[in-house]
Image (cartoon, rainbow, N blue to C red; front, side):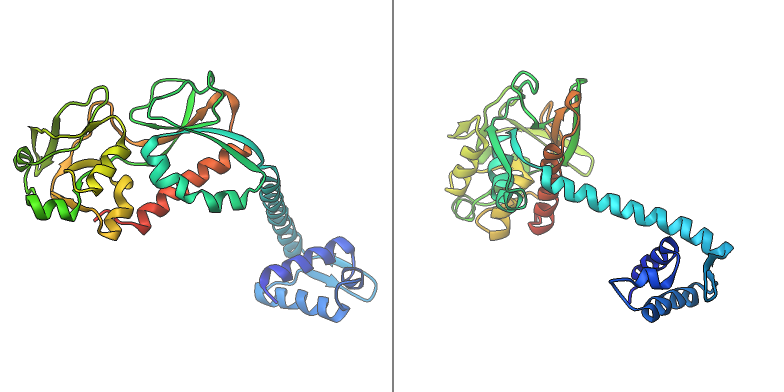
Amino acid sequence: MNEFARIKTFIKVVEAGSFSAAARDVSSVSSVARQVKALEDELGARLLNRNTRRLALTDAGRRFYDRVTAIANDLEKAKSEIHSMEEEVKGVLRASLRITAGTTVVIPALPNFLERYPGLQLDLTLSDERADLIGNNLDVAMWLGELPDADIVARRLSPTRRIVYGSPAYFERHGVPRSPQDLRDHSCLLYAARSYQNRWGFSKDGHFEEVDVQGTIRSDNGLVLLSAARSGLGVGIAHEWMVRRYLAKKTLVQVMDDYTVNPRPGDADLYAVFPSSRGMSRKVRAFIDFLIETFENESASHPGR
């Protein structure tokens, strides 16, 4: 019999007023008495004074009863809240996910999430633009970069860490770049978005340098660049979480890993955000917890190097 079971029996005896009443329909009087005696022996203190007619709490018993009943009540509340959460996570949740993070990390993890919450329906939009949460009736959005001083609540999903990568076939044909200057001789996959230029920055041992790069493929969609890299068309820079699965399978490889790839202006961590004016409903809490867990598991399961 475990300790908490003995404590629950003790509480029941106190509330019922006798061993026989506590034992009714669930146990024998002797079993109840043995559990209480075992608890007293474990604590090294007498909890109950008893005779043939009545039970009374000792001073130690009263103090112990007051503390453990509070703990038992808290446990029941916690169980009730979790049970309620499981029951109430339902309806439609509208979320806007970043294209690459949503496609490469979130969507592959959705089967287990939806199996856990079968009453939940997801209305997903994939976009790298920061949509108006209230205006677009979004429950959750995924944002990359510095957060504005606005009426939102944010939870960080992943820190910024960019890497240089490409396919083994590409590096076999064109050689492996060892330094930023080597990238001048490679076809680089260029991201076309505001504030992004054909200039990549790197840091090493306290020294910062930038290099102008060129390439035959340019796109504002990270998945296009990822597909191009997997097809052996060039060298790319990407967030580590975007390519972890491919690095683990060795269909892509990281190079220049002794350099830190500097974030672009306005580039920073990945966040889940929601309007603070709405509060965190159970379905929003469940989805954000899922996102946090997914990125944590992704990091643990698929190391970047």
